Structure formats: structure tokens, C-alpha cells
Length: 117
Image (cartoon, rainbow, N blue to C red; front, side):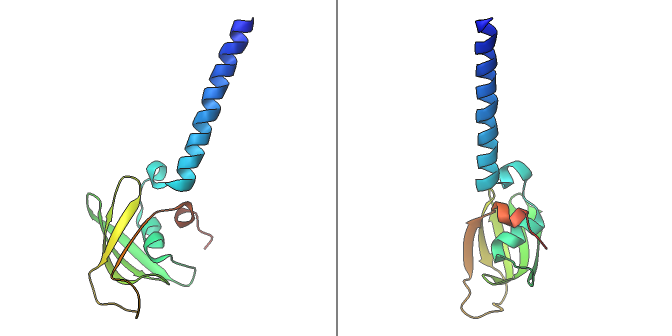
């Protein structure tokens, strides 16, 4: 009988550990589980709020073309995305706002995927 309890405890512990790992990945690097989508990437690049707009389309491999208009980036960007959902963006067109950087980098976060529009 105690053998069954020990096996059950081990299985329960492993399942609990895997659940916590999945939650940790979803909170810190959700693109690993959900993949990269155009709206999620646009949200991440421009930190888009409800009054902003943007879009990204996949060109090839991990390269995306994004046109974003938000508080932290404004204009056209070529964005390289890795398997973790981390990206490096370089402006390809003229700057639409003063003082905004020509290059940006970051990672897709849970807030970029779950929005309340």
C-alpha cells in the first residue's frame, strides 16, 4: 500500500513541477508556447495602447516587416525574431516621430498577447 502512495506522490510532484514550469514560461516567454503572430509582435515593438495601431507580416524565417504607430516606435521596421519571441527591430522607412529610436529590441510578453481592446 505504501508503495502506491509513494508512486502517487512522485507522479503528483512531477505534474505539479511541470505545471509551474509551463506557467513560468507563459508569463516570461509566451511565444515559446503560443508562437509569434503579427498583432502580438506589433504590440511588443510599439507598446501599442488602445489608441494606437500597427501590423506585422512575416517575410521569411524569423524576419517580419512591421508598420507601427505607438508611444515607443513609429514607422516601418524590419524585425528579426528568435524562437524565444525576442526581437531586434531596425527602422526601414522615415521616422514619423521625433526622438524615437531607429533601433529597438525586446521580447514578446504576456501583455502583448493578452490585450483588453
